[in-house]
Amino acid sequence: MTPAPRSPLNPYLVLASAIILPGSGQVLNRQPYRGLIFVFFMLLLGGFTLKTASPDVSVVGKFAGGLFVYALAIMDAYKTARVRTEVWRHHHGRSQA
Image (cartoon, rainbow, N blue to C red; front, side, top):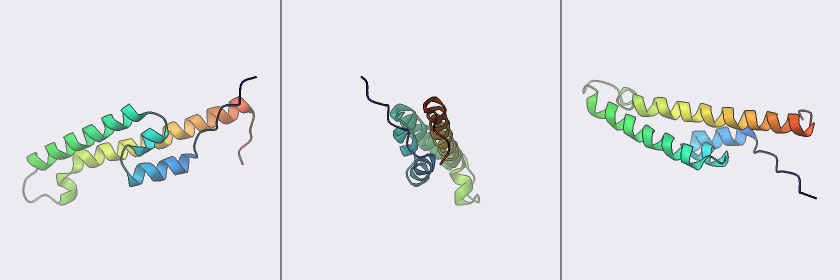
């Protein structure tokens, strides 16, 4: 007899983790390489926009590329966790509690 598979982490926990530490949401979703790729492109595009932005641009504008990838990483981590949770609930016949 095989043990029942673990339920996925709560999507809100993954969301909070992704907001606090970039790439950690993907790690909690068991996708560490995906998280590393997000962090790499966050640094790459943040550095690129920092070097190419004019001096009179705000700090947010100077790091706009990195902030854009950061926002994508947050949405990706939450969406993946949410889909995994709903698939697990459907497969195991659990109602939303």
